[in-house]
Length: 169
Image (cartoon, rainbow, N blue to C red; front, side, top):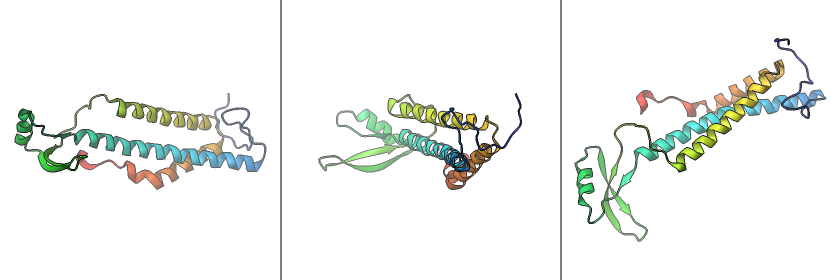
């Protein structure tokens, strides 16, 4: 097996049904790979945004002081990290509550509402990544450059959404 890049406009992609027969079909395949590379970067940015949202939800759990359970309210009122807030219930009644933000990140508990979408999203990212890998493994230089171009465009458009935060803030 030869392990060198080559240039051909009739390289099969993913299945024998997807073999470009014309230059236009080859260009369309390259455009698809550019789009798929950009989508891959978009999925990474989306996962980053989802992880931030899920972490914020976990760190900003709210505790409501309930009549008859003063021990929890007392514990929260002694917490220096808590802030006062007003809660309006569905009946329009205002109650005094404390909004508590966890002081530090810990391993979050397993939640179906978070972990199921996280697993599905990670599986989608892996699937797109493997499709891109298979396209590169054809060793077609046009496919390879198309994937690099799509990755570049996706990062150019969405890279700012995956920036690392300074000191975990």
